[in-house]
Amino acid sequence: MEGIYFFGGIDRNGKYATNSELTILRINEKPCKWDTIHINGQCPAPRKLSTINYNEVLQILIVYGGKNDESNVDITFNDFFIMDLINLIWYKVKIFDGIPKERYEHSSVVFDDKLIVFGGMDSKMYIPSDLYQVTLGI
Image (cartoon, rainbow, N blue to C red; front, side, top):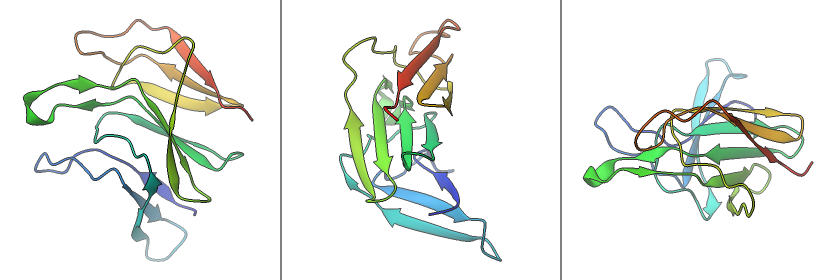
C-alpha cells in the first residue's frame, strides 16, 4: 500500500497508540486520505521515540527501539520487529550476536541490505556515536 506509514507514539493526552494498528496517509489520493489497518502477529509493545524504516525489496517495515514511560515506569527497548506489508503480519526478530544497546530518540536508515542505527539515548545518557547495523537478508 502506497503512502506514509505512522506507527506507535502518543496522542496529545499522553495515551499510547495501539500497536496492533498501523496508520497510513495516502498521499496519492486527492484529498489525502487517512486509513487505519489492523495487523496480526506479535506486535511491539506500546512505545514512542522509536524508528520505523521501509525496505522496498522485501516489502517490510522495520521498527527498532523506543521508550514507554507509562505508569511511572521507564522501559527502553532494544527489540526489532518486522511488519510484512504483503500479509499484514508482525514478526519479532531475534538477534543472537551483537545485540544493540536499548535506545530511543535515535536515527536509523535502510541502506542496501542493511538497517543502520545511530545515536540516541538509553535510560541514563546519550549513547556514543557508534553505528550499529543489521543485515536484512536480501
